[in-house]
Length: 317
Image (tube, rainbow, N blue to C red; front, side, top):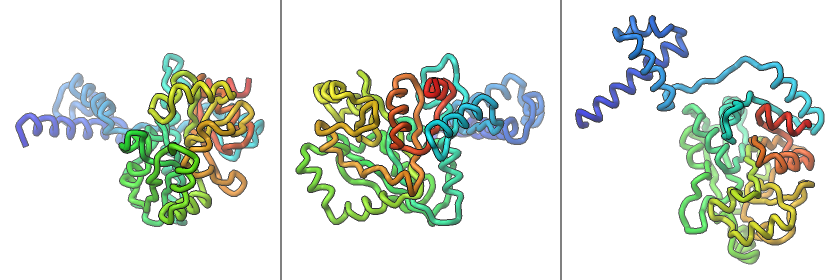
């Protein structure tokens, strides 16, 4: 190891120690400075470095009254089985901040169960951010199955497919879907889904105990379009047909009805598991996603929701 690498490693070690003393042990920065033999300013910088480098994960456990109130009203209005509402940052336009951490906590809680479960996983930016916040775990009793393919149009691994990252973090048996997200034709889709190696994965997904998915919008910056899964002309055709959202590639309108033809006839994703027999939780927030979220909860495409205050207020408005 070079002297530079050794210096960086030592500084990260110091940052982790300072972060632990501050966030876990409850020391003040003055106390950390005294214990580590450094200045208060250095202690402050080390604590900040621990957070910026992801060495410390912070969760707020205190339930905020308005969030609880929003959650109760959402649960009642849309007959949802699970709702969590996190505070909003008034100055942020992020579609993951807050809900990724809340989703990570809910996923972790499910994985702590000693009873074996099947967990189905969708894809997308929010879910990827959530999985990255999971602590390392040993979960050999559980099975994690992907609802969607992990191959991009150019043959590379789909960037926001999270099944492999999750399997590595929690050491559970994982079942990827070695397929393109959207096939080139309905015939190719039928052929791919009929393969003997795919059938057990589809059957496992259908009996998932709990599922976590994102909701993508179908606006000008639709994830399906920006990530190269559909063309600009296909996006326009979907918009013309009334599409407002998608879950693992399945595109739906304002009423939560699946769009006939266009790309839906080529989606290689598994169908969403039963909302009557299991829990299907959407992680979604933000104005662009609002029509899709509203359609999904109204039509009961999902029966669980993790969102933020602003989105909750808009859904209830």
